[in-house]
Image (cartoon, rainbow, N blue to C red):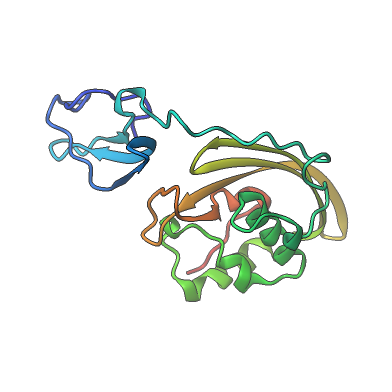
Length: 202
């Protein structure tokens, strides 16, 4: 995927006209509040993210959250704002401590394309050798209306040994079709970083 900012109507690869197969532009009070769209060239199949004149959300502002001040380092989901990315991340980590693979599977992004009945199999296959004993939040950074990065310290048990590591959880917001949408639900985009050795057998 082409990651350069893109401001023209022509493909940067072959100069053909670019089409946008899907995406979202959110407008509130007659102002563009966020843009999340992909482009694809029908001629050469080059793809990328659309940045319309750098107009990415003039009104959106990241939250000023400090772990330990605004949010406990060891929170319970019920103590966090409903619909907040950090609540969904904590829910996932709590499910992992309980080996609740079915609930963990519900937090895989729709864009992964993993069918519901296979999600618990994926979770068990991936995490069964890595038991989560403890976790603490360290930092929460809003990157965009559809992306938040959450840093955690995790204490895991593998083969009887306890390992303490720093991990970053990338939360993304998607609709049911798997497209980035500021009005969608939060999902664990990089859930594999919370384990190791992807072994999904299908």
